[in-house]
Amino acid sequence: MITIESLKKSFDNTPVLKSINLQVHKGEVVCLVGASGSGKTTLLRCLNLLEIPDEGTIKIGEKVVSFGEKKITKKDIKEIRQYSGMVFQGFHLFPHMTLLENIIQAPLTAKQQDKEVILEEARVLLEKVGLTEHQDKFPDALSGGQQQRAAIARALMMHPEVMLFDEPTSALDPQLVREVLKVIESLAKEGQTMVIVTHEMNFARRIADKAFFMDDGYIVEEGPAEEILTDPKEERTREFLALLQDE
Ligand SMILES: Nc1ncnc2c1ncn2[C@@H]1O[C@H](COP(=O)(O)OP(=O)(O)O)[C@@H](O)[C@H]1O
Ligand SMILES: [Mg+2]
Image 1 (spheres, protein in one colour):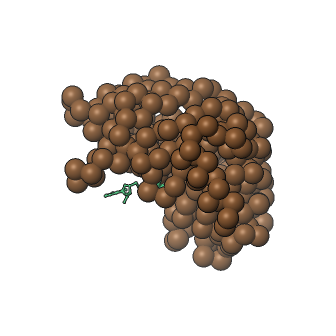
Image 2 (cartoon, helix red, strand yellow; image 1 turned 90 degrees about the vertical axis):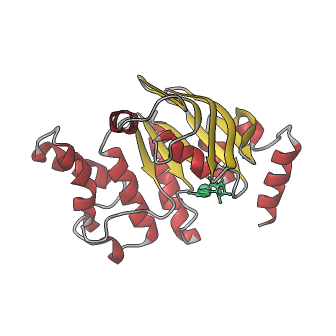
C-alpha cells in the first residue's frame, strides 16, 4: 500500500528526515513512535505532500512520485492525497460550520456523488463515531474528544485507503482519550490501513501490527508492535519506552 524509499527532508538546511525506508501493507495498522522532534509529524506530512520531500520516492496505492529530479505538480499532489486521510493533533475542524457541514464539505466540493448519497453516508459515520445527536452543533460547543471523533469521520468520508493519525489523543484530557481510541480501534478491526503516531503504548501494543521507532530523522528499529514496544533491541528504543513509563 505504501512504500517509502530513501526519503529525505530538510528545513533550512537542517536535515529532519535523513533517509527513511518504510513499508505498509494493505490492512496493516502501523504505529510510529519516537521522541518529540524525531521527525514523525514531518514524515506523515510528507506522505500526503503537505511537505514536499527533497529526495527519495513515495509509492502509495497506484501512485509513485520521486523527489529531487523534477518538479512536483498539482496533479501529483491531488493524486497522492486521494489515497490518504489525515487526522491532526489539534482536530482542525472548520469553526464556522456545524459538525455535519464539516463532514460533508470535502465530498460536496469533490462533486463525485449526489448530495443525498453524501448525507446518508455522513449519517452512518456520525452514528459510528457516536455523534448523531451533536451533528448540528458547532465545534466550539463540543469536547475535544467529540471534535476529534468528528475529524475522524470527516477524513473517512473520502474513503481513504490509508488513514494517517498524528498523535490524535495528545491534546485531549485523559478521560476523553479512551473514546477516541475506541473509534480508531474499531477501524482497525474493520481492516482499515492506518499509520498512527502515538505515545499511547498500551493502545499501540494492542492494535498495531507493526511499529517503527524513529530517532533523529531515522527509523532505528522496526518489527512486530508487541516486540518493539515491549522488548526492543535498540538502546535508544529502550530509553524512550523507559521515559514514557516514568510519566
Ligand atoms: N516547517 C518547519 N520548518 C522548520 N523546521 C521544522 C518544520 N517542521 C518541523 N521542523 C523541525 O523538524 C524537526 C522534527 O519535527 P517533527 O517532524 O514535528 O517531529 P515530531 O513530530 O517527531 O515531534 C524538529 O526539529 C522541528 O523543529
Ligand atoms: Mg509531531
